[in-house]
Length: 290
Image 1 (cartoon, rainbow, N blue to C red):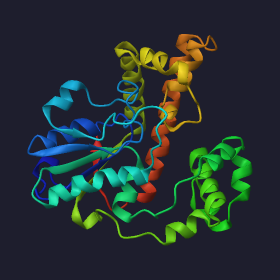
Image 2: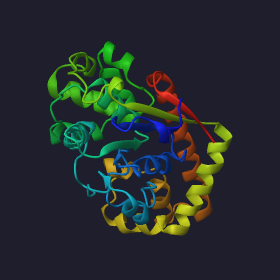
Image 3: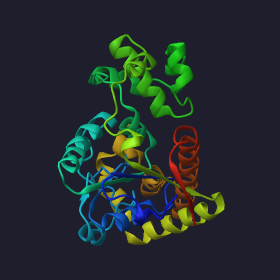
Image 4: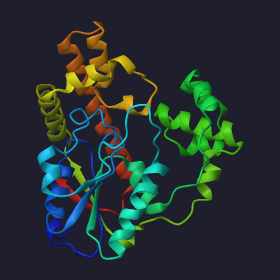
């Protein structure tokens, strides 16, 4: 793989990788040559999580244009389909001669939807979502059709619930919807897909150090600000570390234990990301970190 700064300037760039692997810094380096940084992280879309989601700093956002960061408020709905609808005009502007998008994040589903296509599944009705919120993941998994159950990540409760909601609302399994997927917005042949890979211990040390830095920069204050409207089932509340800090604010965990649990949760999240990337991004150009 050539130096990322020497890649063709006429192609969009995708940068994926586990949390804390240095994706944002690389994206900014590339975009300084004449591009814009576009978010592909499901947690960084929320306005309440600048620190806890490791969004680019205000200085970073001023150094090059950034798009789709912090533009959704807690309580709003959001989905990979909505993200695709928001990124489509950015890609269209580039094709018309605008700045090159440097699309960066750790949400593998966003990248696969972008480069492989996304089934056009109807929105989940509120009453179905409310019903799903009352059911355990094991019950929902047992209700799924065999093809869907075999395809989804059964260890991820959000994926199980999403599949259950689709089947309950539409009468068709998620796998059947996925099999009717339209063409992708940006196939891999039309971009430069870069995947950062990191050695486990190196990444774990960075994760722990970064979370400590987040605490110093105001992560607890961010969580305190949303505590009055905290809803553990909401998408915005899935920020890694937020449940542990909420527990501390409620007097359920000492600070040191809350931080240790949040760091452990982040390491587990990075492990899930690496598993996804290995399975779904075999054709991406690999960049080893450090």
